[in-house]
Length: 331
Image (tube, rainbow, N blue to C red; front, side):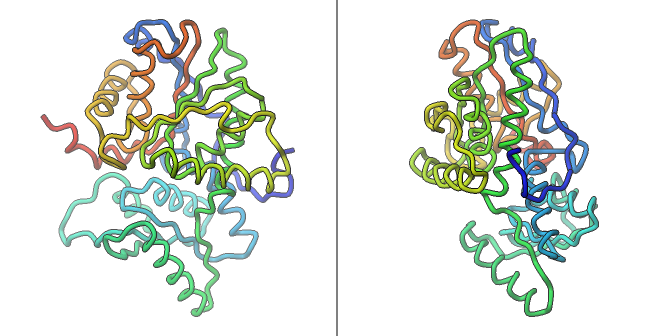
């Protein structure tokens, strides 16, 4: 088995649903039937891709006897929200470290910060610094905890986290094999690496059967592939498995849908959010999934996907962040 000897705790009821988007399919011309993999459809913490990774991260920390779990990100971070939820479920202490200034007194909380408040987890603010300085702060914070006699675990190792989506790739391949049509095109966001590289690794186990369309939401191609190649190679070593296909044999990277950068939605992404909501009653946030859906719609409209070949978009969750993104949709 793939994960023999690797600790894991159950946080998700799997498999997550795979659903057809018939009205969106028709709106895009009907040449390619579109499906959506609902990793937003999980009961814990409103769901999302990071729960799959947390099954491995938290299990490792628990095996090591850690007594406080640290997750870092912006205040609207989905990783932070789901780490908090998983720790609440398991009775673990969680602290969230945000690279932002603290909330203003008397201000309102929306989206993930509101949910973190309700869960009662401690939040630490290290100021509006970049992710590298935030990582330095987290390491120093963990060292301070060790000096106090605590045993902290820093959530986020990319190789261990990718294992959650190796499993998702195997899961998805099985679901797609049971469909009446040929669905071989998978769209997912390209960002920090563990989710998309884990998915690629899992699908590459089946050879060249699938085409994975990576829509950048953060990096240029050179930066992304450097991250991805490192994670993929370390997964091979950790799992002791060499997939039947190489990652770049099955993947295509799109940088043209990024727009002005990370967490800055494009007009096409906002329109994709509206269209999915109006046609299917499904909601997406603007940082990750919206740009992926916009890229999928554009590729289908261009006829870049051969007629009759189905398409699947991975909804990685994060929908609660949408409630902090309302200003983007103001007239």
